[in-house]
Image (cartoon, helix red, strand yellow):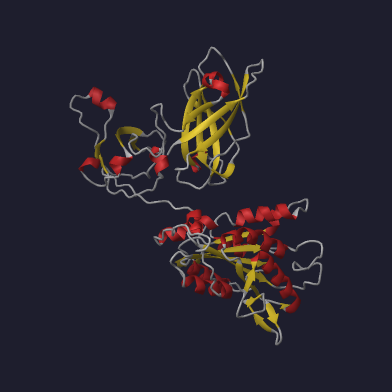
Length: 500
């Protein structure tokens, strides 16, 4: 991987010798990523201590390979001193402020004098450890009470290990762990990605050497050996790789139809001047998902209503009113069918989730080759009436190519929904745990803009509820060993939806 950082101070230096430094960042097209959420951390080195101290961070710029940061660093310039700077670049993939939680992309070193003295006040640097230093890219777990530890396998990105340079030196340090944190240095050895790639053989048995011990003891040979037991290279495919290969995200919109839509107090109230919460949630999420669907046909259902002419209660009826063709054209078609359904059915209860989850799961069960991934959007204003059956349905669905988005609208308590979300504790049923987390639940009220700006509320909702879908899709494909198909032309994209 080749990457370049550009650091642009302003041309005008104020009399107080405050230097304004801005940062931009460019990645070559060969970088194995579609985009990332970039942040740059600036460190300054103490004159006397030589320790690196964090000076500041840029803002995080989402979904780009070429971010231009707005936040500036204001540095005091001293002509008589060598002011060493370090810029670390990270991919921010969590809400934590802890840098160690982010993916390290690279770093570069320079002096403030280099920036000021560069042509046009513009300095370009490669992101790497070209100064001979090393950056920690992985720590194993601690194996206690043994002289012959065997560490668990771990996965690390090639860019984090060697910045894409297969012959770059990789250094491994070995320590004797102490509870108080004062770990004793045992020794070190060096290798490279290319050497590792040979797998288990005589060349990947390394002597762990301690230079201090070697200097003091004439008979010192080594502090032990480390043997590579296995090495495997896996391609990391992206969400876009699967979408380009024709992996259609199918949006199935389902609404809990309870209440009286003619009453202003109802969450289904058809206000002629603004959308109700159900319509806002449908539009917010649907408008994003429909971009990944080739034919823009969405099977849309309602549940929890009495249907004409006999008033039979249904927990999965097509909003279109056509049992043979439940598809709606685009998210606008879904909204139209939703409002039409409010006029023709009698809203009722209870709120049963398991029938619709099982219905979508049956379709997903027939398409496990990676050609389709199902996204089930459920919007509800009530408490789940069949929690036991719903948990079992989620556990079963977790083994299929599908994700479930649940949006809670209204003032109800949604404690049961949090349990289904499974972020902290994986959903279980009858002693079986879901093999992966496929449910994302959010209460819409948390995203409502206080000023009443519906567009902003919808944008906030969509951003949060859809954030986990790419990771969930990739998780399923990876566990099944499914690779993305070659990118399809527009004429080759699939045009057939399964009826659910």
